[in-house]
Length: 340
Ligand SMILES: NC(=O)c1ccc[n+]([C@@H]2O[C@H](COP(=O)([O-])OP(=O)(O)OC[C@H]3O[C@@H](n4cnc5c(N)ncnc54)[C@H](OP(=O)(O)O)[C@@H]3O)[C@@H](O)[C@H]2O)c1
Image (cartoon, rainbow, N blue to C red; front, side, top):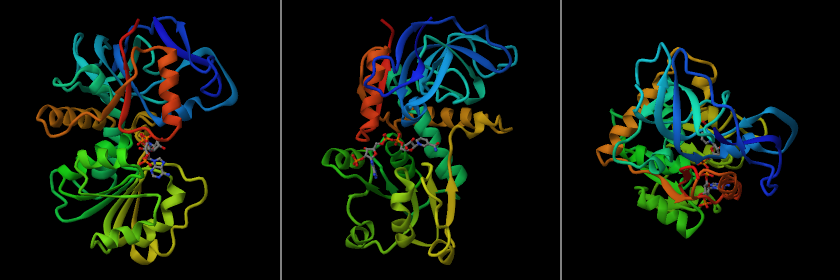
């Protein structure tokens, strides 16, 4: 099969950092696995973090890639959720060979039925970020999608990126008033177009901007950007008994004492690969989340967060996607589709 893989971990401007290769097909699926023919992939910061330069080498070559949309080719003997020919989308498993290949094995319990109203390219933009936002808001934090969080204010820091673009939409559907942060006119406009009630600038002090909107404090915060950078500001602007959701590993130890202790703030971590990595008993939750997301898309309540298609799935196009993500300025999601 065609695949894009690496043997060395190199800076992205090195043509050897991601290479077009012809690699053996995966074995026939067993157990809960599905064999998927990949039609489209999207790229996330985790792809660039996994590829970051280091002295290690890989033999056989390592295939990266997490978000994918494709068609089921074959199913394992314990698979019950899908059959050959089904169109699916998923965010994969960081411990297994990835989606930057024509064929991939993936456990059906972390796979969802692709939204029928979306193309493979539009669909592949969603799984990793939608699972992240859903698990964080509705399974780690104490909010429930169907129970409504009417009147509560949610601040989303770094809202125009991949995770923020779906988090804004889910939070609005769940009844939050959403204050998004963005630092450029394009990202502010994008956040508003996805439903943010207000947009403030994360390059300026946050609390005075909230106060200028007449908001004294917020009940909930999602920090989707640098955890260390906004920690003190969140402690200042969050309401007593509020909740903060985090997804980015801090560089230093976080001070979880006052004001967090004095205000009795709930601190919630999300890592969307935790269920697949530790094979938790409830890993089928990711199948359920992706199915629910597909239903919401097909009902016209959520839209794809795809902002740019970068052409076919090739090493050159994938290197461009990694380069754009490493710049930190991506709006929504980038995707690649089809094989030349
Ligand atoms: N734990 C998990 O399960 C999980 C899952 C998904 C992602 N993540 C991590 O979460 C982070 C965000 O992921 P993503 O896919 O949303 O990233 P992304 O798409 O690359 O985010 C890009 C956006 O981030 C904003 N941004 C850049 N630097 C910022 C800063 N210092 N403060 C606030 N906003 C900033 C930019 O907005 P402006 O141009 O307006 O500044 C840009 O639009 C990444 O570190 C990723 O690895 C973790």
